[in-house]
Amino acid sequence: MIKRIIMWLIFIAIIGGAALLYYSGYFIKIVITQQEMGPYTLVYEAYTGDYNTVGPVMDKLYNGLIDDVQIKTDKGFGIYYDDPAVVAKEQLRSDIGVIVDDQYSSELFRLQGKYAVKTRPKQQALVAEFPYQSQLSIIAGVMKVYPELNKYVIANNLQMREVMEIYDRTAKKIFYVMPIK
Image 1 (cartoon, rainbow, N blue to C red):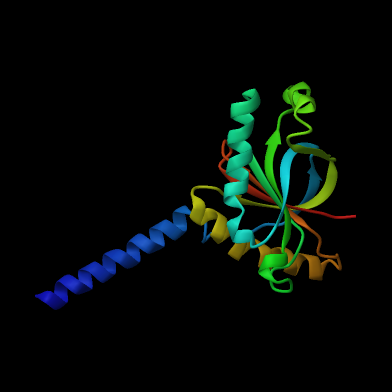
Image 2 (image 1 turned 90 degrees about the horizontal axis):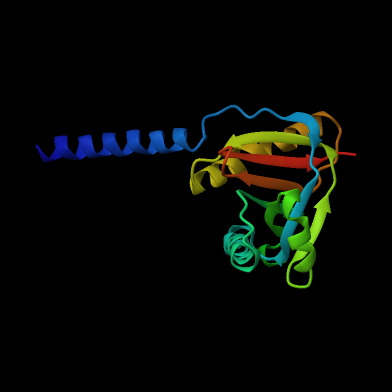
């Protein structure tokens, strides 16, 4: 009797885990396309350190813009400059922040002393989309997208560059954008 209960619990745990992975996008096929992306107005903070610890920086900027000038956005981003397989965690460089609609440009001009603001121009890029359902989607996206992006870069004789991850809450998608020249 105890064995049967344990077997059912294990079965339910496996099914539940598989359902969570499916919901987070882990089983989707990754498609890399070339397309124009941008321009983007970015409010950001330059960050050095482990990429796994950037969430609070993005939250601080998001909440600060709401508190300071009532700017609300549904798009966060991270521009990741270094390969964590090559660079030590404490030396990884990134820009972390939010994407702001052009309608807020006058408010941002007043805040330039308090926040770093830059425009990322429209540019040709490699792009992959991944569902954004939960924090697990971010982890699954990294595990699934970067290997495919590397394969595409090698197969097309391109050079790996920084990757911008755009977390679009409204579209429920993460966009992985790597500029190409």
